[in-house]
Structure formats: structure tokens, C-alpha cells
Image (cartoon, rainbow, N blue to C red):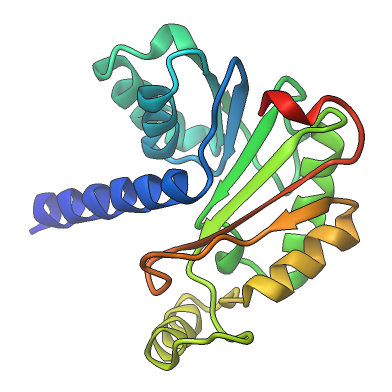
Length: 206
């Protein structure tokens, strides 16, 4: 049963990664840092699609062995740097052109999310890009069944909440980002996405 659950989780993570990158492609010679990147599913999909890209996986130290194994099995070790740490207490590496937050924000309260967005803003260079992808609830075009499901999910988890794209966009702007883009989602009940940028710099490369 545990193996079957792990397989289903991995399959759902791949689906999220593919949907996200269909909405918000990552192109060119860039370094992508996936914060809270788990075993590296999203980064692996980025690097599979973009042979020029490199990756940084940032997550808790106890996650690193699983990530190292997966990255090695996919023969991506030379293109991915692993950084163990907590975004609550540790500084983020400053080597990325793009930062991704995939199904991270909805597990946390507003104050934690605001602090994380500020940390990402500080870590990115001028012109750097932030990609956020997760189920988003409420807003102008809400899905009632999805909203209800994730309301129960966050209640069960005891923390966090699903937010609308408009709410996340506002929080990004409050952290200093600009140029928010919210593409149309194919499966919004699974994942919606948005991107924004740190002002200044060369925005053409990512």
C-alpha cells in the first residue's frame, strides 16, 4: 500500500510539473532553484525540457538523501546542486535566475508566506523570475468543488490555506515583485500558476 501511494504521489507531482511548465516555460541558459523541491521532480522536468538549464534544489536536510538518489538515477547530478536547509531559518542560495515554489505556499500561514516571498526577492538578481504553482482557491473565477476540497485539506493539515491567484499576486507585489502574469490553467483544481519578476536587470534571458 505504501509503495502504491508513493507511486501515485510521484505521478501527481510529474503532472503538476508538466502542467506548470506548459503554462510557464523556462528557456535559455539559466539556473533554476526549486525551494521546497522535495525529491526533485519539478527540477528534473525543467532540465529534461531545457538542456541548457542547471538546477538548485533547496529543502530540509532530511529530504536530501531521497533527492540525491533520484537526481543520480536520472543522471542529472552534474546539473543539480543540493542545498539542505529551512527557508524559515536559513538564507536561500543567491545563484539562481529563476526560483520556483511548487505546492509550497498553501501549506503555510500568511506571515510565513510573506517572509518566504521576501527571502526569494532578496535571493534573486535584478530581473530574476519567480514561478508559483499550486491549487488556488477563490477569486474571480473560483471552482467550488476545488475550493471545498482544499479547505478541508488545509483544515486537516492544521496550517495554511489555499489562496486565489489574485491574493498571491498581491502578496508578491507587496514583497517587491512586478510584472505578474497569471496564465489560464488547464486543470486549475490540480494546479494554477503565476509568475513575476524582480525589477531591473536583463529579463530576456529567463
